[in-house]
Image (cartoon, rainbow, N blue to C red):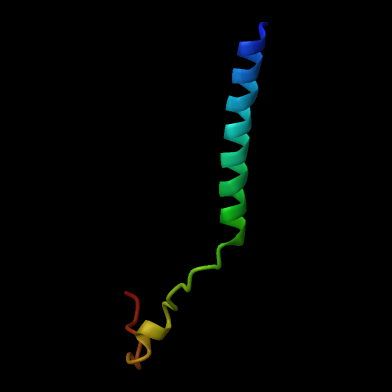
Length: 52
């Protein structure tokens, strides 16, 4: 393998590793989203309907 091919391979693999590492870090450090509480939306309903 000649020098140009080796440099191209190393640079392209380095770029892929940097992007993968950056996005992996970003996924691990984002704060969790607030999920709506499904029961709090039903607070105004006093009686449940009977299942038939």
